[in-house]
Image (cartoon, rainbow, N blue to C red; front, side):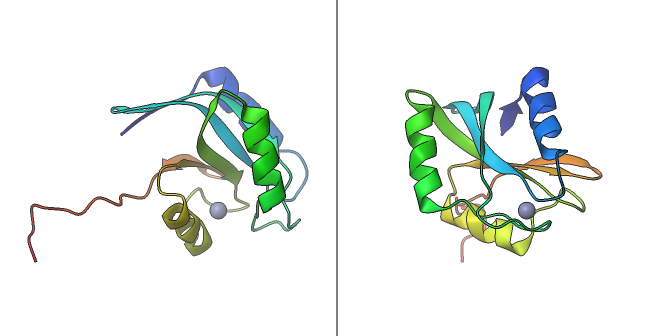
Length: 126
Ligand SMILES: [Zn+2]
């Protein structure tokens, strides 16, 4: 899977995530094609829980974000961690709930893009 992020968008997301102490979150907008994802913009969203170590996007905010995205496609979610950039078990649950989306995690040690693989491996029959 290929993920392309313009440096400007990535730097802007990192700047937003560096503000304050709470976890920031939002949507990644762009295109999805058979080879991967091309992010071209992002949409910061309010974190429904203001903690340093978790985030929740309320259903109302999600509906509002879809309206704000308009013709643009929501292809991913971003958030930051006060620790490393690896998905927490809560993140993994979210990825299973929204398997079509990529997840950008900004951590103190760097960043990572993750996507859950929901395809069965046919090379190892049961
Ligand atoms: Zn997380």
